[in-house]
Image (cartoon, rainbow, N blue to C red; front, side, top):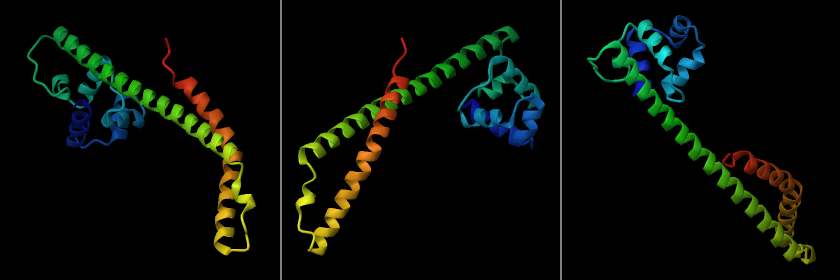
Length: 169
């Protein structure tokens, strides 16, 4: 809601992101992040945005609030706390998803490694005089060769990622 309102009001005033950024003394990327909903301005910045766009803070937040200035600041602060909580929850959900994907990747690499050890490259004993068998054997050998070269690096990276994405106490 806030991100859409900032963008709509900025455009209705005929301002570019760069022009608004100059008025607020921030970089253009900050305006872009606000408008995309990737971050939210703090309460002081929200008041500055309100002044720069000549729009009440309540309009930026999508409501018409008929309260005193002190109450406006309290309401704004509460809304920003809710938005920050939602962003933190989204970030935590992404972290958990990535964490479990990395764990799954490790399990898949270990399973494939075990299967390759157990199978012991059966294609090496095939009759390569048949073209179809020769192509299949060559492809299997190439895949195994690539796996043996890259799997350790990917496994180490995945294990590092698991430690980096674990929940910190």
